[in-house]
Length: 116
Length: 111
Image (cartoon, rainbow over all chains, first blue to last red; front, side):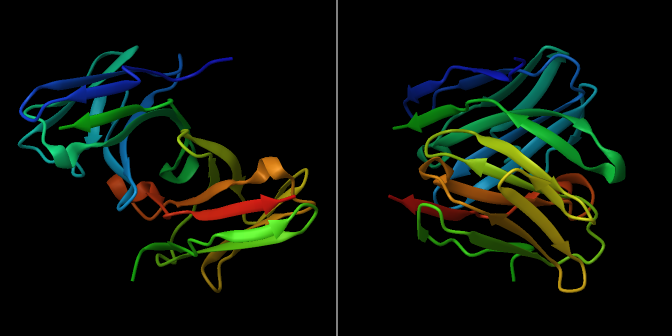
């Protein structure tokens, strides 16, 4: 049963610290997405990659967030420096491109980040 | 107006009831639609795609109404295990707008 894996599952850190979240997409999926979910904002798309190339990262605060895909089996989302308002659940999803430019996505279990 | 709108609920229904949710979207050119289910403190899971001709999977039926720009999800014979938040996703365009999530409708099925 292929799944998206994310590490760490939980992270508590102090304001100003660097946070790195990792994601292993499902083998064979060529698109990877990073989302953030909070009670107030719901699910927000931060960035996504196709064939490891960034397609859109307009949802990310560029001054502190960065997303990369060093290889086909690893995607990373980094926050430096972290702030309390970054506290949220960060989901990675992988998927396949469907017709008409849409995607069928499969989500990882998420990283629950708390910044104090 | 939000691009993709859902009634947040909660919808409280007894076991065995039939319940329906709608999701309205603003881009008449949207081509792809999905329903996801999210349990409390879990990740969203793909429930079903919504095709122009509709889609049925067991007790779940999804429909698309292009004229009125909404999709619907019908759940028949509700089970306690159907309690969750149901998210619709609409392809609203390119880039980030290719994947626009609604804020979800919460369903609580009661014994």
